[in-house]
Amino acid sequence: MNNLSMIKSRKSKVLSALTTGVSIAAIGALSMTAPTLASAKAVQPSSASYNFTVEDKYKGTATRTLSKSGNTWKYDVNARVAGVATASQSSVFSLSGNNVTPSKASTTYKLFGIGRTHNLNYNPAGKQVASTYRGKTVNMNMAQQAFDDLSLEVQIRQDLLNGKFSGNYYMAKKDKIEKTPFKKSGNTKITVPAGTFDTVRVDRIHDDNSRSTSFWLAPSLDYLPVKVTQNNDGKKMDLELTKVN
Image (cartoon, rainbow, N blue to C red; front, side):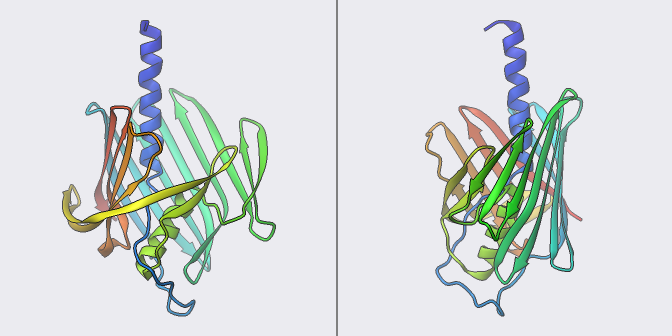
């Protein structure tokens, strides 16, 4: 591999890890019974900060802010590796009982000033979602509710709060809707810069054995992720909570 190819490869790894640090959603839920509409617990608005490390040498930070106005919720996430890359995500959705219904979402990233944006616009009544990327729009049918990264995180946290089990969720990608399986891997106490937490560990089930993704979720924080690790073909990314604002 020549020097130019090596530089491009390193940039790609940083950007991949950056967007993974932004989108620490799609985790998994843990019980068997669904609550009634009236009894459903709800996540609370919050703000949190994270550090993440790529291959033990690239250092980045991220913030996650969940806000509410009436029954309109917004989740904003921003991440950066200083001097290299930035990424931001936002999701707007409603919450009825335990059910999260996204209305729109956007992801923008920049690598050395050059970037892309991916938008999702949902039509819940028509069971469709329109995905727009690089000037092309793809209309996709939703046989089951599909989520963007951030609304999916909130749906999973809702499920955890209310004791509703589902090992499978559906995510809207650029040109398809993809089923995403997870499994519960036990409870553990972990220490991160923000402190020590009792957590539930959940692993994403990948088709490719060279990939692994694990999440540690804190019940005391409405199952907010306090730690995430990802290994993609030997390239490791670690994300840890530094502060709950």
